[in-house]
Image (cartoon, rainbow, N blue to C red; front, top):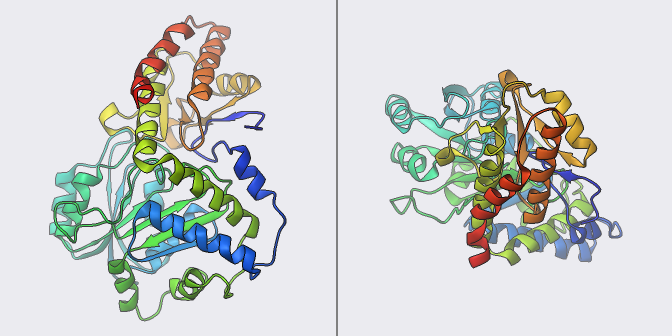
Amino acid sequence: MRNEEMLLIPGPTPVVDSIYDALGQETRGHTDPRFVTIYKNAITQTKEMLKTDGEVFIISGSGTLAMEMALVNTVAASEKLLVISQGYFGDRFIHLGKAFGIEVEVLQSEWGKQVEPSDVEEKLANGNFKAVTITHADTSTGVAADLDTLVPIIKKHGALVLLDGVCATAAMEEDMSKAYGQPNYKIDVVLTGSQKAIGVPPGLAIVAFNQTALAAREQIERVPAYYCDIYNWIPIMNDPGKYFATPPVNLIYAYDEGMRLVLAEGMEKRYLRHKLFGKAVRAALAEYGMKALAEENAAAATLSCILYPEGLNDATFRAALAEKGVIVAGALAHLSGKAFRIGHMGNTTEDMLEKAIVLIGETMNDMGFSVNPEQAVKSLRQCLIPLEIK
């Protein structure tokens, strides 16, 4: 990779040369048949990754726009939305819902923990909720949602499942054809962005609707949006040669290449790689006296929120590490200064993670701590043995 630094934050993530090359191709008109072919292929590849029987939307925007698009096209004003929040970005659905006059109720877990399924069951049994939002991997806490448990509970009560996959898609299973116990117990909407586990530069909002979610849109007479109204986008996604709003031509080039790489690796292999990367990074950092906020059985495959050992200064540590070429992110909200967040997803490689673990250890030693990078690397490699077997 031609990157000068290792960008190990929760997103954006490292970009490989073939994606940069695609991004840098000649800009063509958005109705040029050559571009239209690439756009169509990007849509087809996204449908293949998510296995949806409905519609996929790939448009200019951030993950937040994708959240808005998912919400306004499924839940009308005055209808009830349950937000399952396991961190800062789960909470964002609260603000989005209220902005559109949706009646929002929230189940919030303690940061670092998952919401109790029994609480979800109780809440849904006592309210007529149109939809439930789940953040698959919360970028603030590194907590993963247990879809195998949550989806059946939600669907049993007749609500739509809106899955925020911004920090999970292409790294953690989001199979929209999968039945969770009953034939119709499926994920209805998946929303994501281009810049995390897909490994493409920021700028694309990606949303997939199944047939049940599309039927929910039909029931809403008028959505409080124009750009985010999927009825304005369905004709474009079915025929990208048509025009509604100008697509980001070069980003579509890059995204098409990113999706090619995702599918070429194979989804099952990719899920395993990310799972082991997360486990390995957390095991290695534990050798330095650094504890992950999330317990291992609730930890995301894509990023980890790591608590500092006593006496380690956040700003000094991250600045010194950045000078060595490794960029990690600070923690959010009440964890600011007490932890850092490290991404291990997308185009990140085993060699990159190993180098980062060594440099983190060296930085700690420079700051007066006494840690053993060799032992940390040993722990990292031990966790990654199944990848070598595969």
